[in-house]
Image 1 (tube, one colour):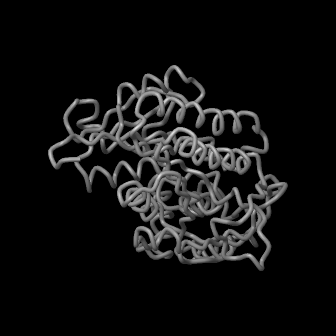
Image 2 (cartoon, helix red, strand yellow):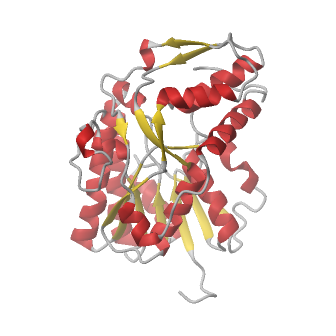
Length: 342
């Protein structure tokens, strides 16, 4: 593309943690015209700082378009309006624990919704570059002797969510091989930071600490499996990786593991967050409702394939990520009307 040619990008799931940070990154580092797909009920808190010029029609501005993965007619409309050169497909039912109680909705939204989007991309924008967001959860329970996990590890998903992401992963590669769509599939390992949903362990811990600090709850932290091993990345490093993914020689049908460089137990994350609080007598209590029937407990990636292709590497230290996550919740719990569930 020439320097003066308009570049258009579509972000599905733009109001989520990752989508909103990607919006921040693209707004600061490009002059792309950004289209974000939102549902009528999508909370807009994460992107409110971009409202000033939203839907103004100006080059480089944010444009919100209503659409839903479960409504192909709306997806067709979104693609025709946005005419994207790049698609970041981040929208999903993204909560593994929720998928155990809502497996059909999870499979429908993630697999069928992704198939509909890719089918319509072939029809409407066949030259676009499409980031298909899979997940490290597709690998499930990997034996210790095969850690760190490479891209060639077998899928052994341990939740309906993980099963759905295995389907998404396969769809991304299929649409490249069958129809020539330039798909780039990522298996992102644990990534967190400000705006992380409180259904995830480390964000739930941070929220509970913040609530206890203002006296809303007793200094009791409810937890699930603290022994699960995770490699942690900052969400702001993750979106930088996604930008590099689609702009640095994107080879059609490629798939990559991406993740951080700090590995620890979930319990170690809790210990880190607790060191940032002035309350020193927290009680930690196991909550059976926070335990998965099966847990993918050795989530440690080999990211050499992606780093060799792009030269990307994590930049934000683990401790900074955790501090920023806790500060996010300290601000959020003080906003009148916010829910204190979980």
